[in-house]
Image 1 (cartoon, helix red, strand yellow):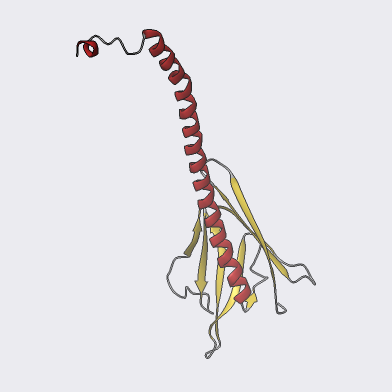
Image 2 (image 1 turned 30 degrees about the vertical axis):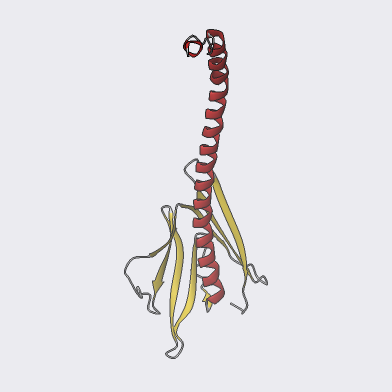
Length: 171
């Protein structure tokens, strides 16, 4: 019993200082790796949100282009796309859908054949944080309409999607 009480096992001051020194070298490296991982996650999350916004907007515009009865080339331009669509085939009523960018949002305004708002009074939001909307109309003999939609994330990086739609019928 006396031998246990007088035991001199333990760490010396030198051993403790070496251990603390090694931890002082390893700990900042671990913190930098953790910080890099967090920044990478935040960047990827921001980019994914921007990609999703642009993709949703592009899918909607392309679907409308494919289903449109006709493109109004007289009113459509690089910043605005005007589509005629059939509201009720039985009544042969037609209306318009006008896609445009207002501030930093892409909106569609739905009008009846008389040019009056068909549903609600204000344009319907399609996607937010849209910094560019461009329509390239077909030249004579061409049947492709190209749509470009651009968005920018919080860090200033931008993404642009471009899609060309083949017009199935003569416009």
